[in-house]
Image (cartoon, rainbow, N blue to C red; front, side):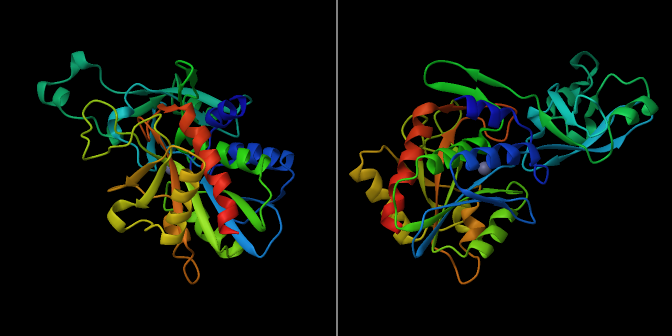
Length: 344
Ligand SMILES: [Zn+2]
């Protein structure tokens, strides 16, 4: 789990995936893959020989924030990168990655007016991110500008906590779990009659961008995206909203975003379900009303690429911390890895 911890603690909002990319390159090289980086920042690792080309994709980027403005008192306004709920931002500790500071990052706190000073109406409404600011403890604008620049990426405070033998809580499980799975699959790649391409994709959270150009270049016969999905086993989520449960296996997606995302190709679906059955790998079926994966852009590339998604159910997505069950990660690796022979 050391590698997973390093991946989760690394910072990489969309378009600024450098730290995650460095780990991916290093690990793919250890796995004896041919590794390249394309113009959009995708890492493409290739291994194996054969007529069939199989692409596995996991996005490297995470949701976060970016510096928009530094006011005259030295407080920082920010924009959100990817789908972040304003309500999770209040009083969070964040790291601003900056090239001008020796440590490489500045710590800040997202500030709002304290409850004691909020008017009755104010205290009942969610505070909008435009009304929040990051406090880096600077005396004024001049001091703040010495430390932070407009456009600097901001991540939530890196964290990785083992709750018990099965459950881990961490930042950026979406989608460092997928990145970890990709690396493990390539390290222990079974002998298959195919070229397997593992792609750490860039800029998924802001429009599934990296996967599209990577798929164009690779021109695969099949693609499986490895990502996370929503675990429904917490209070206030009804069973008809999500019946997925942590610890009950990876989710094989039927369709995403009520059909606006990937509609899994029947052959891909068939292979994944059969692989799970033959190898006694637990799995769940995911029908997603909201949310998409890289598979949604890959399957519409070129003349259409049969694609699907295998996702790990996590609790508290797109938040500063999430929770997952270790067995679901292990089963995901096993399922995707064992399915490769049936695509070849
Ligand atoms: Zn994701």
